[in-house]
View 1 (cartoon, helix red, strand yellow):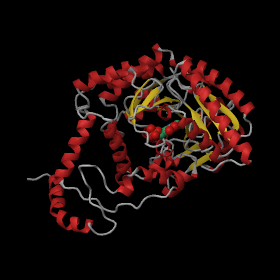
View 2 (tube, rainbow, N blue to C red; view 1 turned 90 degrees about the vertical axis):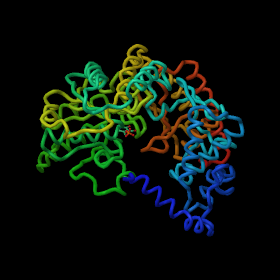
View 3 (cartoon, rainbow, N blue to C red; view 1 turned 90 degrees about the horizontal axis):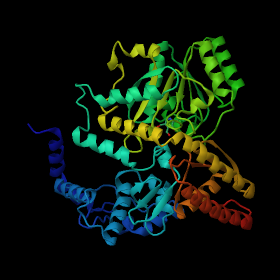
Length: 523
Ligand SMILES: Cc1ncc(COP(=O)(O)O)c(C=O)c1O
């Protein structure tokens, strides 16, 4: 019997003739596999400039026609590129860049082409990432960038750390994924190491692949344990974009199109102890049962917002008083980022559940986790399949996690973050004093730093100016006027100085423009 996938290819094959005819109609362009050219208008680099300047797109192609033979041929071409069999001449590299633009344009999401600085600010050719080591990244054309963004928090250990790559490579050759029937040693080993690292009595955990799923699991565990439904979260808090985690995320632009989300979620302003006390009092008076309060110890996507010193401790006390669990989302702040292994250690607060992600996979594998104490975890024992995942905690990810912990401790990455963060801050505050028209505030903890600019446009201008100076930074998902500095924790002092020099140069340029026109330039 034919497998369904072959059936579908066959039926597509039968439809080829009629589709080919349709492809000749205006607005439909057949694909020429040899040159990867769809249509000069789409793939020509001029179209790239059109995206960046006016946001207008070239005419889109409604329907592309591939035969199974063409798909096979294409996959061969991609494999040759992937495995290094194709010689990368200058012409071929330019062709690959064009091909990637076309592929995003036609098959992925053309919206990204408008938003990516790698398209809009990269002069003649879009920047295509190709390789990286530590805090340096090269694009396909060999242009080197200093990475001050850290892949939005995944590169605490830097790119391609040799020890982490070696651990993953060894496991890759032995057994990349789990049978899911025999016990897998690295899952247990990583869980043991995490229990040792985690604050207080946090001991048992579940592994999954990304931050949003770690949060999702923590919300489910809180409901399962407390048998209550409500949650309290913070305005501008960011916890991911799956339906559960989105429900506790505090920014309307991501929430509104997907409502109704989880019911009984209440939001408080972040860092306001009095507001938190009042919310607990109010909910208890009206009889709303709350399973958990979820907070980031330092709000990351909101722009590296550090709460007042008493905030987390008071949150802990209120949760204990009211029988509400405290979930701390350390997806971005964990693994040394803020100058301690976990940010909650700055205030000696132990949550009931902690979420981890991003750098826990060492910048090599997707990995995340939620961890809790034995008392709470007991509800997961009776039926361990109540929360499970095919790929969560796979051997490759666990190998990366074990190596990441080793590197973090051996290189004392948390201490490095504290020291280098202070160095960065000192200079950024000087810039704030020198360029008050454009740079309004600087804040953060360790190497999670936010620079607040006067407007969204100024923020973008600085990020774009840095990109042209080959430094990677980016805005945050919640605040467009905040530019984050979030490099690898082992970035060298020499590179930090280089970043500061280029930033100073860029601030001078943007400030000059502002002084000349009296306006913040719109990008
Ligand atoms: C605090 C926090 N929680 C959760 C997430 C979601 O993680 P992911 O994008 O891996 O799903 C993020 C992502 O930025 C985050 O910063």
